[in-house]
Image (tube, rainbow, N blue to C red; front, top):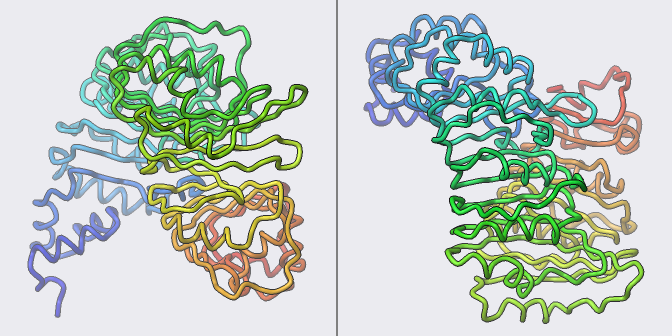
Amino acid sequence: MNIYDLPDEILLIILQKLDMIDVFYSCIKVNRRFNRLILDSFFFRDLNMTTINDINSLYDQTSSIDSKVLSRICEKILPRIYDQTYRLTVDEYSAKYMFLASNYSKLYSLSLINFQKEILHQYLTDNLNLRDLLTNQITHLNIDIKNTNDVGFNTSPEILPKILSLCKNLIDLNFCGMFPERNFVVYLKDLSWNHCIPSTLVKLTIKLAALTDCLHLLDGPFVCLSTLIIAVKYSFHTTEYKNSTKKLPKLKYFSLTALSFVNHYDDLIVPLLRRMINLEELKLYLLVNRSYSNYIDGIQLYDQFLIYMTQLKNFAFNITSEIHDKDIKIELQSNEEIQHSFIGRGYSQVVSYINSNPFALDGVCYIYSLPYDFEYFKIDNTFQGGTFYKVRKLTMVERTPFEDRLFQIISQDFPFLEILHVSNSWSKEVNQPWLTLITFPHLKFLNVKYAHGNYTLRFLLKRYMNLPRLSNLVIDYSMLMLITKNFTYDPTYFNFDKLKCLDMDQLFVRPKNFHLYFPLL
């Protein structure tokens, strides 16, 4: 049966499974009915002119779209659908074609992804069509800046003010918060707010360098925000910062994710939360270092800030307390006491467990609310299990050897896991191979740079693990040489078939048979 003989509704289902560029190319080459069906549908309301839309954008630094195809699409097809397009996604490669025309009359949402920061700045400065769209039409804007090899902070303080000054009608801004493994962050300490902030802006998602950048942002001119979603990459802070006591009555939704351990929870985070007197929804993902204090529990959370949030309707949290009791001996709570602290204070179901005295530490306590509502999770040998459908990024950290059961458990309990970091320099002797093959069907990014060689072997050998979608691997060069026996082992033994990026700690000369191990690199 010819595809063109299928009913219209079946053809549309097939089209929706295709890449947008393939659909456009079909418009140029196929018959009149197929052409009409595509162009007369609602297919182009959300127009994605990239080949990058997931974690692969971390490393796919160039577009795979042929320039001649893209040029023909812009010449033959786009003039017929400009007035149908409401949402547009471009990267720095397709942008130079897409912004040649300025009559996207209904466009309100724009995503600029996988841009070098210098090129993005140039577009914002020199491209008149883009500037006109930002000034007059765009209400929803997503910005993504690709990773570079810069040492230290990968920041660009001039881009954010330029965007805010251009976008007169902006309602929702996501600035560098689209992909979890991006290095790009915003450092606000020395940023001048001489530019006009759009009074329409009510929602901001942003990845900041440090916790005090969050404080600078809330003490700045973002007076109209009702929703603020922040990820903080580093734990350092400036000691000269003075906490403001100014209330934040317009803020209704606040989400804070700390991607590294925070040392100043009590004197920075707690006072900040007390200012959010009309908050209706609060999400906290925190890794907290504490000395001379006890685990964070339900009583502390309630007494320190929840009691001030009289409008709060939903509180989701995952808080890890790591206690360093150096000079003063403190009796740490038991898990039973932690559980009891949440009773009678309006909490939803809470899971807690404790890892006591892992070497130099006095203890680590994990508490999180259910249903689990975060993309991140961190575990050690005390992990209690459960089902975590939303988790995409998992960190495994332990100061004793991982229990063998843990690997099987996480493959079952995190069914949609895409990013995995394994950190453990201690391992049991491997006396016998695993009897069960473990599969991570969605895992794309694996970091074993800080893992013992036994764990590295277990993840990368096909007889132990099935990783059908692994595209990004972070590993030490010396470890790669060790597990491949200087590239003399059979390459078919390893989960290297789909790798598109190999991130190592040093440069090296590729051996002659390198491509046999990494055919896609």
